[in-house]
Image (cartoon, rainbow, N blue to C red):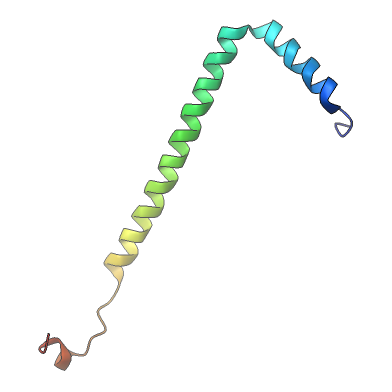
Length: 71
């Protein structure tokens, strides 16, 4: 159904949305979307860092007791 929209159809939809909501409303909406994407990326990076820290904390020292004294 949506396979044959094409460029003219997308432009028409964009113009209708612009007329209905106005430039200011769309601008503020896009700003909020950008903030959401930035927050999402920050959360993902913090989550992966936390997982790496947990994995490093749980890592076992497998050095034999006899060799630990030498170091």
